[in-house]
Length: 307
Length: 255
Image 1 (cartoon, rainbow over the protein chains, first blue to last red):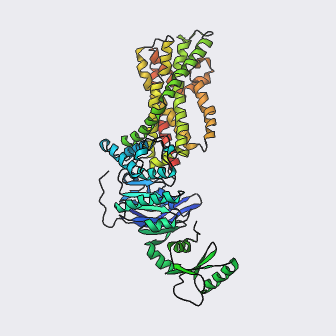
Image 2 (spheres, chains in turn brown, blue; image 1 turned 90 degrees about the vertical axis):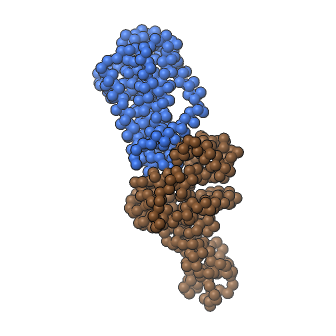
Image 3 (cartoon, rainbow over the protein chains, first blue to last red; image 1 turned 180 degrees about the vertical axis):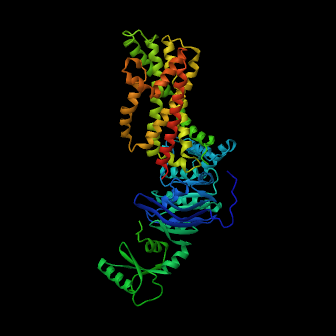
């Protein structure tokens, strides 16, 4: 699996152009254009139902696009998808470890699937167990492992063959904060090793911390793409003013801010006025100024409130 | 691109083998005990009323019939239930298909594993019957091959059903509507000649009938030209069902 197909300099690791996919009347992906250059971690950020998982499934040809062009590591999908799949690793959103098998046996099956030569298999399995920090638990049945251990094993399973490209579909969904931190360390290590990572997430903090580039997805297409700091500057300016108060007051603040041409959003007990850079007579004097963040951008562009 | 790669099929079979190592004892137990009960019940129960069928001792008639039913039940139920659980609840196939393996290889690996087990365990009823006094011909050595081909077809049929049905309850229709008639009208416990003429015609379409015929002709060294047809029918069934299983599982797993 160490043979690397030479990519032309301009060929990105992943290229999607005009991709559409519907399920019956539901359009999941609607004219998606996305490029993931080699060696970066791209965070595909979007609310639930934005089409992130369908996009991920199309990259392994587990879903076939109705329209558009998809290329992965220089291979054309779905025709050459098996060659692409041999060179990439996938961590699905839903845990699909084999619960009848031990951690080690799970890895052994995938070592075979990824065509790791017999003489290298034991070492590859051992390395993946170490990566999942399950060296001591290799012979435990998957059923006996904790949620965090299972997720680490799920990630390590997709890395056993040293892939060039890794797809992580909501890698930390449903995990508690401590486990999430652990996984972030693992994912950050991938980027450090020069592996291209495409990670879908609906956690803003996750995208902000791990991704070199964030692509915000809403209703089946990319609505903005760039470095997190660029996205914030471009779409939310420098500062956001948050005003707290009773609902009636918030309504009033929001109305006058909108009338003055500001974009606003409500979050819980506050109204946030985005792009409140400098002083402006239309803004209330009270309230707290804070640096604009990716959450502001996300909410403005997707119209979704954050969990 | 569409060819079947042994390495991919081997990975699926390796998984099945690991699972099998865990439960081979219980499988072996039921494979021995079940035909023993059949032989005791039918052999002594009916055997008291019927001495010979088509010139064969009734007990030996049943013993050879039970080979076919053992193959049928083990292969079709594994194909149906195991595949359904792996597809719907354990999401095993979703995990596999993200790796370099295609649905055709998944089906081939699963069905081959089931068929190999079928080939081994279909000998159990004959071994039990030998203890009851059966004296088989040397041709008994081809019985595992017959068992393999039969199991391949029925396991593929089971996989097809697992890919098609919306829920596990739907299997009731298949078991009662398809499997039970196949099993009864195959000449397992009584000869087809005892049934009306139309049943004789229908039995030609029943793969299990061809399996039973081949097993009897092997065990009693009673080969005839008809066995070319018997074997061809079984092989045709196996290949057609495999194709159907690949088609339906791909439809189910790839959006």
